[in-house]
Length: 300
Ligand SMILES: Cc1cc2nc3c(=O)[nH]c(=O)nc-3n(C[C@H](O)[C@H](O)[C@H](O)COP(=O)(O)O)c2cc1C
Image 1 (cartoon, rainbow, N blue to C red):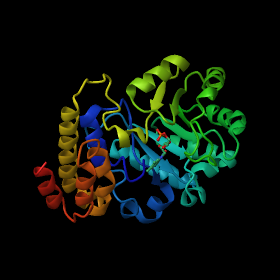
Image 2: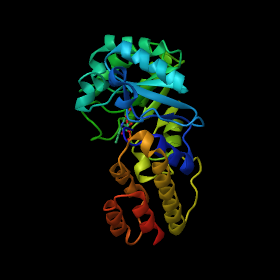
Image 3: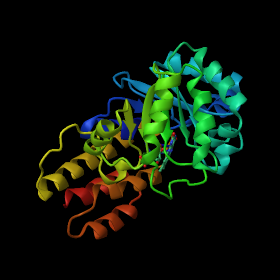
Image 4: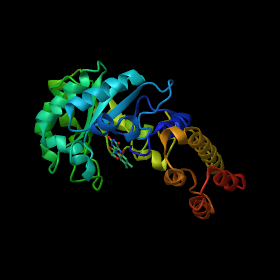
């Protein structure tokens, strides 16, 4: 997730309960191709122990995507994921969900990314405006011999405003089984945690589950076992994670170039569900340095 799953937060999540595969926030190929690393603000920063980790790229220029994919290989990524689902205005000008309407470009982008020699996957939505579009769109992607296909079970138009269309999973799975049994099918949308994911995997017999916003309400969402925790223990664990996050921010601030303000969007993940949490969050939101944050946390 953009401005969320950077090297810092991925390490926080790894400590809380690691997923089986990491996906980076998306990186625009054209921007990187024109202006190099300074255009992408640490989006591809990772540590050598992060495996398997897939670099997500997006764009509308296959040549630039090929060059960025090759660069990702030299950085040590394990795979390339192409975003064909982002509904943001800036993304659909030249990529993201607009590729749903440009299948030829989508095919060229996949072929270009493959030239790096890494496994290539695609993340997309059911369609642009209507849920039925998947019937034409997904066969095109499945025809490209990709390593994995992640389907965010909504259309571009639906954004994240309606419940994910789980009811379509059986038909989509049948399609995958028919066209490309070798392509892993990953489902995305409204998955809360590992237990919820397991229930879905069992009910629908799918290969993988991608959790996005679930980390905002439960940073332990990837834990394989639900640990029975008292409220006090959970509070302490969350505080410990926040300390860890703040320290990591200091470690990587220079390389990522992310200002202190960007740290503030994470406070609500850790400081919640206990008496006085709202007041503490307000104090944290008024901080202007990590030392100020630490001095507030020390009083808890
Ligand atoms: C803040 C934010 C940033 C996101 N950035 C990306 C991104 O860079 N690449 C991507 O494929 N999806 C991105 N998404 C979409 C999520 O990956 C996911 O598809 C969507 O939120 C639905 O899944 P969920 O219900 O598990 O969150 C982002 C979502 C949010 C809320």
